[in-house]
Image (cartoon, rainbow, N blue to C red; front, side):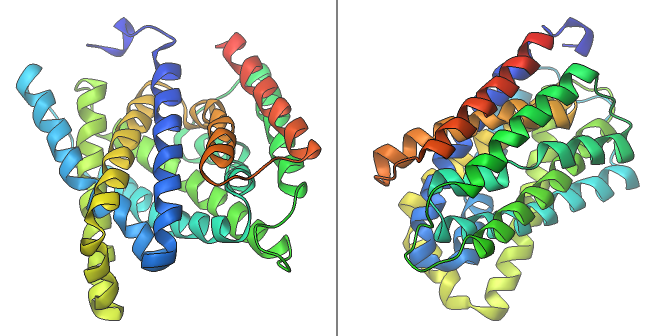
Amino acid sequence: MKLADVPPWLWIVFTCIAALSQTFRNAMQRSLTTRLGTVGATHVRFLFGLPFACLFIALMLAVVERPRALQFGATFWGWVVTGGLTQIVATALMLAAMQLRSFTVATAYVKSEPVLVAIMGFVFLGDAIGVVAVLAIVIATVGVVLMSVSGAPAQAGESRLKPALFGISAGAVFALSAVGFRGAVIALGDDPFYLRAAVALVIGLTIQSVVLSGWLLARSPGTLAEIFKAWRPSMTAGALGSFASLCWFIAFALQTAALVRTVALVEILFAQAISRKLFAQRSSLGETVGILLVVAGVAVLLLAA
């Protein structure tokens, strides 16, 4: 299927599916942080996600045409390595923030990324966005900021500064990761968008798994052993993470990273629901108003799409 034949709203569907899957994966990783540590819980999404990514691409090759002209040039490798390594750092920062603030608020910190994604996408990929899209990004970002300064820390006695630094830094690094992976998908050439997305995903997860496995073998082999002992929740987190990443990459193949990441702010709503259900965490008035602004920003963007 060529991009010209793709429904213009399809990227929104994949973005929402990715956001929902990612929210559940984040919840699983958060629950594993106490047992495995931040680096160990970070590694779970890559190591256990790789087999599922390989399964996805095998299924694609079985039912669709084989790739014709995938371009594994220096541009692709530069982007995929950038996306893979920065995603490792961003995930670790996000999990550290989630240990210090509520699941919803930590997610809100991380979701400060759309403005940075828009800037980086314009600078590095030439992705242009319209005035209405800029307005939507600003409205949603104001909502994120309001959420981040409201409510109480997850742990008594903790200041808001440290988790804010972790979360906002994670958002900035995730922004670079999003631009990197979109650049990698584009650099692969003119093969079907879903196949390019799957190929970039498998290579990205392979790089991440090798790097983090090597790091843990050298610095904390006991953590690597604990990861395999916790294989059941790790497998679930890996499957959710791999599926979410595939949907992200497909969305990146269809639309600019800035617009994808703005619609992805619906993840905050999903995180809110999970916070109430799994972690018994409630939102303050400021957080609720922030959520409404995020919804408004996403609604403006969807109406303009």
